[in-house]
Amino acid sequence: MDNTPNPQLLIQLTEMKMPFGKYKGTLLCNLPVSYLEWFSRKGFPEGKLGILIQTIYEIKLNGLEYLLEPIKKKRNWIKT
Image 1 (tube, helix red, strand yellow):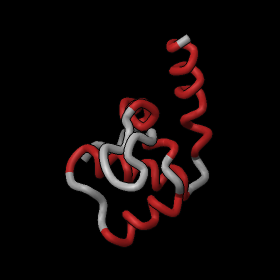
Image 2 (tube, one colour; image 1 turned 45 degrees about the vertical axis):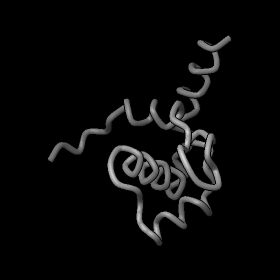
Image 3 (cartoon, helix red, strand yellow; image 1 turned 120 degrees about the vertical axis):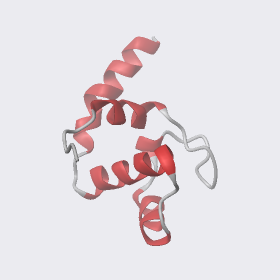
């Protein structure tokens, strides 16, 4: 199995919105830790969404949110 980090996942975390639930429409990178902890207890969704939610959970759990800052800044710069 390839353990090389996938930068595309980080980009998707700053672009994809939660498609359902209490935080529908919220960017995955902006989901609150309490919601991510709930998924951790109850089970992450299947497929790509589950991988992304689990990834942002691990990022926030380990204090690595700074990894997303350059991506967020570039994304905001492109939109203006």
